[in-house]
Image (tube, rainbow, N blue to C red; front, side, top):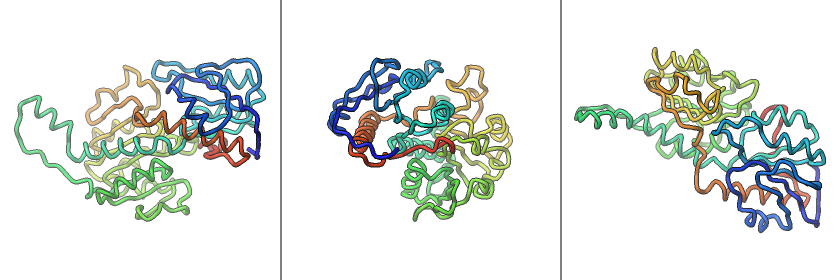
Length: 329
């Protein structure tokens, strides 16, 4: 959005419920701001912007309160979302082409990257099997491996993928990047970078596939039979992005027939994951309820990011992380 310098009180409508924001922290960073909410999707008067918190996804709530807020306040020209991905917001924002959407990309990079490394270490050190052996009182040899010996393909080299690369490189892992625009490269830590159309090629000879890419029309179903089949025997998939990036039926088949040995899934095509899903009981699948982002530091970082955005808005400077709604990220 263009520069909007203002010395008056900025009015912000806060919709959603989680996490509980530290509004005083935001005010200290942003200046004179009046907040209505959180949790309110309809309020009187005009607003400069809407701050969208999380709703009740894990409780099965499907309607995003942002839609009701935008209908009630057509004067709003800027929405900031606490999430990084926008696939779930894209249809709504396409219906409001005059509204700028900014995201919280980067706020969750550290906890998610640490979660990925934890999954890879569990895979290498076979923690689940060691726990089973303990329950069975079985004392036997179990071959383990080192994370530094692994060739890891990271799909998506944004804030999360780049942080994964930083942490994995500390273990000595060989890293390959995959991104929509391969010409942008991957920095000093990434040995090679491929375009999304070369994912199968990138996965040849790889021991791990990490998904940290946005869900778009082009990336839906990106990981299918040929991609998983290109991985090394005994390989692992870690998905901390969106479930629809993966063909879940193919994933289950490749876990049974190889070369995939394990899949750590923190995102699913349908969430909450239905009780009837075969993923709950499938051998080699480790289910987590989309919590890789969770950290006691997340609310503070999210408030700091929005405070910075509000300050930029007041000073007429460009906003950070403006989403390309048409492209889907």
